Length: 234
Image (cartoon, rainbow, N blue to C red; front, side, top):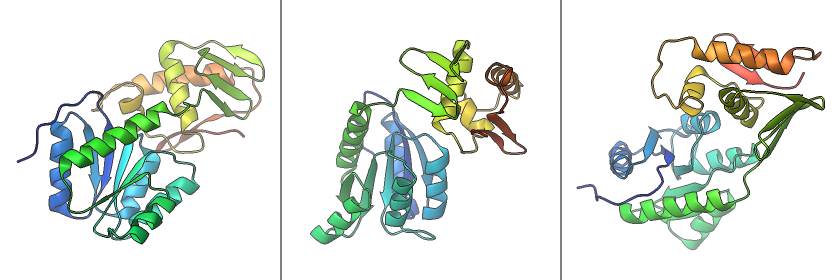
């Protein structure tokens, strides 16, 4: 029976665990605790999901097919991903834990474990991450967005955006240089967890592009045909 545990702030969690039974249990337990959970069973897919999604905490098994957990974490850290990571492992010796933490893990939980402890550790990592300084100024080439003053400037000139356009640009700038898919925009800018089959994204992207590119020499908002959009300088 999955324990019923009270929760406060809902989290979005990625679980990379190749034991299907364990993964299903974790998913169900986090879901019943009020959190959103994505699950995958191999390291290569897990790394791609972590790179292309927005998660509060990653729960990563150490021994994974296709790419082991420590490699996944090391590569994420090398790419600048600071998402808190909890490592799950049957390897519980001191040297094993030290190796995991040095690879970029923020916490290390040895199997077998109680879900109540896993949940408490994940919540602690989320609080720790939220308490860190949040980046407030984003720059891509000569385009700047300031979250505190809620202003956008390009080449030193103010760009006036509507609230949804500002949120769209902020998300694109947070993922500068990466392909941002329609699904990612629907979930993170519009808070839709389904495709409403409307052209709302196309309309807002078109309006945003006009405002940040009109009267400027260099385009920064690029359409990646069949994939999504990418914000990059040049």
